Image (cartoon, rainbow, N blue to C red):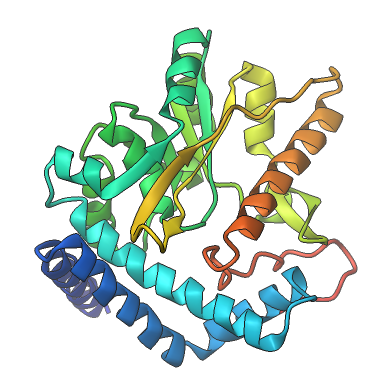
Length: 306
């Protein structure tokens, strides 16, 4: 069994490395076009993921027609493939080339926060557009930070991906052992990146409405911000079809006045952050990760959605 496990690990790694290396030596536009075709192939083959996406889109957009929701789901798969093509460029292109591949806006918000903060800074994003770019992109312009990741089951692929993510000075933190590390980063004037838009286990979540349906949402970011007074800055990286490139959009800090009642403040801030994510998804409805079971964890007594 151990030998089979090692063989499977190696074969998966060899395949992943081959795909990334091959795409990485192609022009970025070509790599992303090929990636998009891979996404379309995945759409035709991944029936269970299509089912999850269809359920999610019916929950989120009951007012849309079935044809409109199918179009959004296809766009989601296109985006996943395109992001693969983009990611392949991260390890092979020089800094200036990578900077020119994207269109940043709002870098002044990071500069201002860095200049005036008395502690750490939190960047928060969602699985929208090229979310890998929301961590990699700022490092291209000198804004490095630490961010949570769920380690892949294949350690060799994880090492391959991690090396790319950290190429320009970022650091990754294992999500499963992150609590002390996050506090330490913020208290030492560091910058922490978090993605709070996925389903969360009961022990780590509170239920807040997301597209009108209660969703188990991680409250750690709100608690960290309230306890350390760290500003929260939203960042997203949507695809711009007209310009045929990804944007890196950094927005002004989220404003929140704490009441002093931590439990109430955590709930209100978590709700506000969730609402902000929803507003961005509504702006780019085909670019979110609709194939994720966002409403899998249910309030006690409620039937399963999937």
